[in-house]
Length: 339
Ligand code: ADP
Image (cartoon, rainbow, N blue to C red; front, side, top):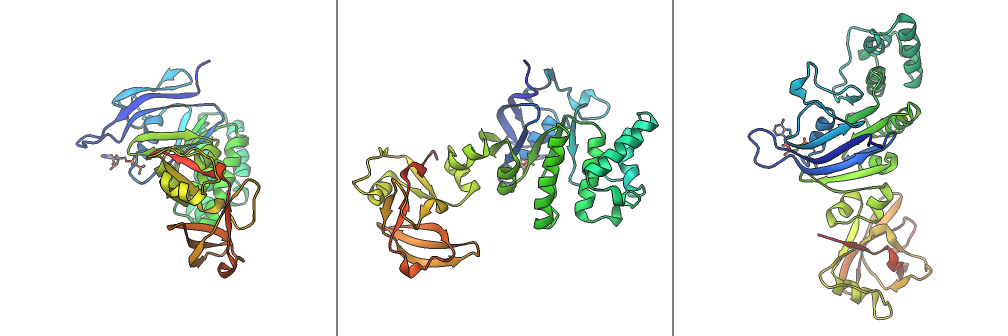
C-alpha cells in the first residue's frame, strides 16, 4: 500500500543562501492524520509546507502524494497540487463579493444545484450561515478566518496545509478557532499539516508532532512521546519548563538509596511540574530550601535549592513556601536527554 504522503531525503537551499533551509527531511503521513510542525523561527517549517504544497521545488529527494511524485512548480501552469491546498495567512478573500459568493467561487465548475448545496453545507459547517450576505470586511477576524477555511474547503482538498493560522487573532478567539478547525477537518475526513510555534496548540490537536531545528527534523512522534520522551534537550525545553542535571548532580540529589543506573556524561531532565508536594508511591523524598516564590495564578513556581543545585518546581498555588519541608519525585519521570 502506498503512503498518503511521503517525503524522502528532501533538501532545499534558497538561491544566494549558504545554509540549506531544510535537509535530510523524511517522513510519511497517513490519510486522516493531523501533523503539526513546531520549531523556532527560521528553522524551516514554512519551507517544508511550501515544498509539500508544490509552491517551491526541492533540490534533492522526492515527495509523493498518493503514490505519485509531485510535479515541479515550473512544470505547471498554476503552482500547487490537485488535492493539496494551503490556507494562506493573508486569507485571499474577494473583498467585493459576499461571504456566500466567496465560498461559491471555487465551485463554479460544477452544476448550479451542487454549487448551492455545497455552499450551504460549508456555510453551516464553518458557522457562517447568518453572515452569508455580508462582505468580508463586515466580519470579525475569526469569522474571516472561518470564511477563508470554507473557501479552501470548497476547492475539495484531501490534504490541507496551514502556516501559523490565526496568529493575528486574540488568544481566546484563536484557541477556540483552532479546536473548531480540527473538528471541521475531522468531520470532512481531511488530513492536515499545521505549522505553528504554539506548542500548546500542537499538543492539543495533533496526532503527531514534528520538531524542526535548523532545517532538520529532530523528532516526530505523538504529543505524549514528544512531551514525556523528548530525545534532545532542545525539544524538551521547547515544550515546557525543565530542570537539567548532570549524572553527578542527580546522584547527589537522589541519594544512595536510589538504585537507578546513571551514566556519566548523560544529561537528565525533570519537568518543573513533576515534583510533588505530597508523598507519592515509590517517590524519592527531597529536602528543598525555597529561595523564591513566583505566583502565576494557577500555580506557584518555586525556586529551590536541593543538595546545592538550584532548580524550579511548579506546585499548587495554595502551597505555603515556608511550610514546604519535603518534596517528592518519581524517578521514572526523569528523562535521559541528548544534547
Ligand atoms: P520558519 O517557517 O521555521 O520560520 P522558513 O522556512 O521560513 O522558517 O525559513 C528557513 C530558512 O530559509 C531561514 O533561514 C530563512 O531566512 C530562509 N528563507 C526562507 N524563505 C526564503 C526565501 N524566499 N529566500 C531566501 N531565503 C529564505
